[in-house]
Structure formats: structure tokens, C-alpha cells
Length: 298
Image (cartoon, rainbow, N blue to C red):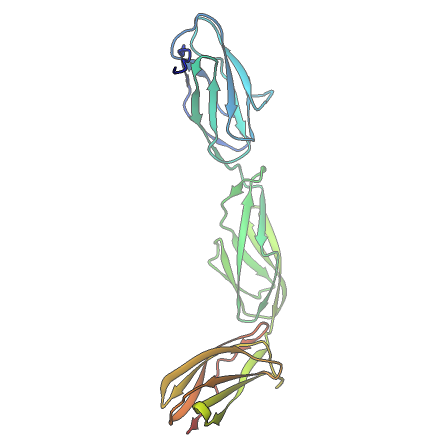
């Protein structure tokens, strides 16, 4: 047999409209009402979906996460209450009473005034001529995120920012040395330490060839050195091998302790071969972008 539930005596609704609040600020008066006047007092419990929300019978408190109010017999509307929330978002307020349909209403809680400002990264080492992105983060007194668009500066003048103001912004280093990056919003300033260094250059010292008749093997060896002429290991090198001026093969490899990487191409027909280095990356170095002249004809 189907279960029977007692009929509801009526429905609760919010008598006051949804409000937009600032975090930590007290709402305007809030009340709930019944669809018809009850014959006896009705106890209503108010709750919020927000863990940081609280209610009070007056704007000065005391505050609690739930609040009981009474709609007196013969009336339809509860006394005014007040709501406060320190978490930005859209909390849902509910009013419930035994035997009545519940009331539900969503409020809007915006972040409060900007109180703190921080910069990421908190420190950076940038190569001369290179770039470094910076991001500023603002928050109110309760840790809610506040959108900011700071003005950026560096002291001493080691480079420039673009966009400025803006968030994020990108720093381009134009002079070496140590300094401080500052993001400023109104009276607030956040800083980050900066060092601009001269990055050593890696170069392709030579490209040499060896041929092995078996399987028509062509060995192409790329050798790297730094500005002091020492071999550079751990570099990722991408090349294109050209035959008679047209791309024939391509590959990528990593230099060993001798600063060299050898690529093997099989079944190479007669012709003149040359190699172009298309990409070269290694931590702590910048590539000068030059591929030395090279060729083998067979």
C-alpha cells in the first residue's frame, strides 16, 4: 500500500528579496512569511549553505550559523533577522518549519575591499634579453580573491613591463644586476627580488660527416661548445639533412659529454648533402642561432 504523508499546512517564502553583500558586511533586514496566518505559533529555522554564513536577530548580533524565529499565531511574517558571510559566493538561505514547505533564496556575497597584495614569483633570475611573467594576487580581509591591475616597476632600471599596468605582466630584461620588482595598487605595494644575468652562449662548433658503404650509411656529427670553447653536453639538437638543396631527413638528439651527437641516415643515394640546425636548447645557455657551413658529396 502506498505510504501516506500528512498534508502541508502551507508554504514558507522569503518576504524580502535577494541581496548583494560584501564579505563581512551585515545584510539588510530579512524575514520569512507563511502563505496564510497560522492558528498557533510556528517555529522557523534559518540556515545557510555557506560554512562562513551566520544569522543574528539584530544587526549587532549575536551571530550563529542557524537561527530560530517565531511567526506568531494569527500573523504571517517573522521578525526581521540579519545575515553576514565572510566567504564570497552565492549562498542559499533556507527557512524550514515542521508541516510547511521550505523557503529558499540565494544571496550574492562579493569580496570585500582589497587588503593584501602579493607577487608571483617571489624571486627570479632572468637572462639578459629574456622575459619573465609576473602575476599579482589581491585578497580582502577574509582571503577572498580581489581582482587587481597593478602598476609595475623595477629598481634599479633593469628592464620594462608590458602591459603596464596589467595582470599578468611580462618583464623584459635589458640590463644586468640585482633589483626589486614592485606591483602597486593604490597604497598597497608587493615586491619580488630579481637578478638579471648574462647567459653564456652555446654554438655549433662543427658539423662533420662519415660514410659507410654498407647500407649507404651517412653519419652526421654535430659538435657544440660554449664561449670558452668547452664542449656542452645535455643539449637537445634538431637538424634537417638536405640532399641537393632539398630536405631529405630530419632528427633530434642530445649531446653527450664530448658535446657531440651523431645522426645516422641509411640508404643515402649519391648526391651532395648539407645539414641545418633547426633548434638547439640547453639549460643555462642561449644559442647564437648559427649553423656553420657544411657539405659532403658522394
